[in-house]
Image 1: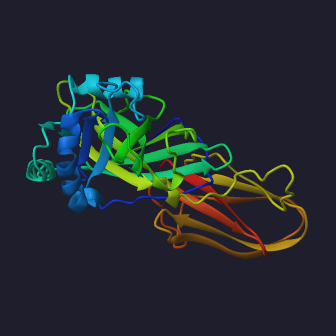
Image 2: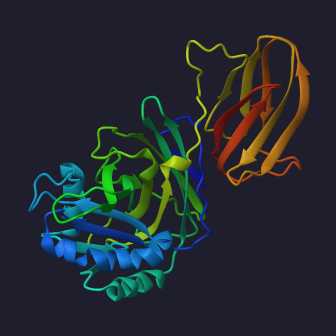
Image 3: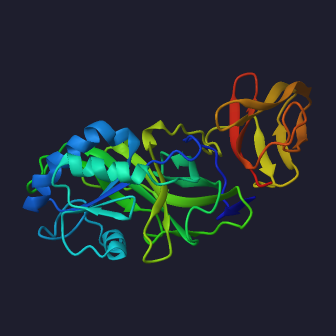
Length: 352
C-alpha cells in the first residue's frame, strides 16, 4: 500500500536509497559548550565516530546550562528531545533511543552500536528534496517503506538539519561536530501510521527553512537527519534513521525567474496520481523533443521517444507503466522533458 501525507510538489531532487532492512543506528548526544564533563568525553565520542560515522546518524543537542549562550541551543527543540528521554543533565547519550549510555570510552559506544545493530530492522528510508537557494527554503520528502510492522504501532518521524563541523570554538570546545541547528516544523515528530497490509509505504513531506544567520553558518557542512521512532511510551526505539548532505541537492527551478522567458510551460496533474497522470505542456513554436521518466536510482523506466509537435498546448498521458507495459510500483519518479537546448524536470509521486 502507498499513502501520502502533506502533499507538495518537487522540482529540485536528491535521493538516498538504503539497502532494504539495513539498519542505520541513531546516536543522540546532549551537551553544552561550557560543560567540563561534556568536553572530557568528547574525544571518546569523536574516536567512535572516526570509524562509525558513515554507519550512524548523529544529532547533538546543546543545552543552555551551564552556559545559557551556547551558540547551538534551540530551546523548543532541545526541550522536546530532552523531555522525551527524561534527560536531567549533560552529558547524556542515546543509541537508537532505547540504549542510554555515558560515553566513558569509545568502547562503550561501540558496544551500544553493536547492540543496536543486533535488532531486527523492517524499515527503509528514502529522501528527496526541493531547495531554493534564493530563499534558503524547501521541502523534504521522506519515503518510509515498511516490510512489516516495525514495532508496537504509532510512530513519529523526526527531521533535523545539523552542521557536520563548525571549526570555531566557545567555552571548553575548540570546535563542534554534528550540532543540531533545527528540528523541522514539529519538534515532537510527525505522526506516521501504517496500514495492516504490508509492505506499506508512506511519504511525509515537510517544509524547511535554513537560517543564514546561524552561528558560523556554512551551507556545505549542513546535512539532513531523519529517524522513525516509537510513538508509544515507554518504548523509545528508533526503527531506522538516515542522513544526507544538503550540499548534494542539485536545484532546478520549478518556475523560471520573471525576467527569464521560458520556451516551455509544463505541469503534471494529478500529482500524486493513481492510474494515470496528464503531462501538460505548451510550446511557443514547433519543436522536436523527448520525454523520459526515471526512477530514483536514475534508471529510465519509460521513454516516450523523439517527437515533433507544433506550437500550442499538448497532453501526454502516463499510465504508471514501464516500456514493457508492466505496472511500476508505488514510489517517486522524475519526468524529464528535453528540448533542443534546455531540459525541464519534475517529480511525480505514484500512489498505487
